[in-house]
Image 1 (cartoon, rainbow, N blue to C red):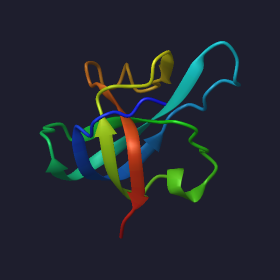
Image 2 (cartoon, helix red, strand yellow; image 1 turned 60 degrees about the horizontal axis):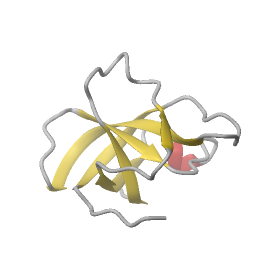
Image 3 (tube, rainbow, N blue to C red; image 1 turned 120 degrees about the vertical axis):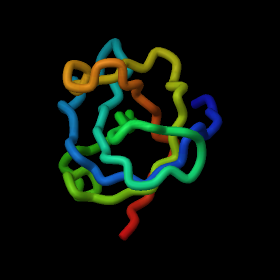
Image 4 (cartoon, helix red, strand yellow; image 1 turned 45 degrees about the horizontal axis):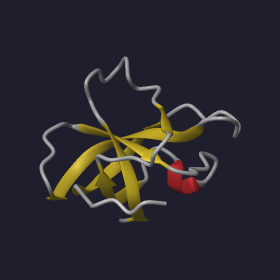
Length: 107
């Protein structure tokens, strides 16, 4: 996979997991999750929420449940041919989806 530059580093609280991605097929689906922004450490981000595409996210895992705090390293660029499964598009019109390069749980 192509390496992307980190555009934003922030801490967020997982607000809502999005819809599960369809089964593998002709499209490369990426799940979108909404986080409430706590702190921004790198880059500029002025919204209260951020939409994050997590490649291979297993929504059944504890780390993808509401209330979990994470440090997120994000890129505005996404993998070629990726399709975001963005169930938040109507609730958050105009809010871009960032691709998660790295995440870690924080306290």
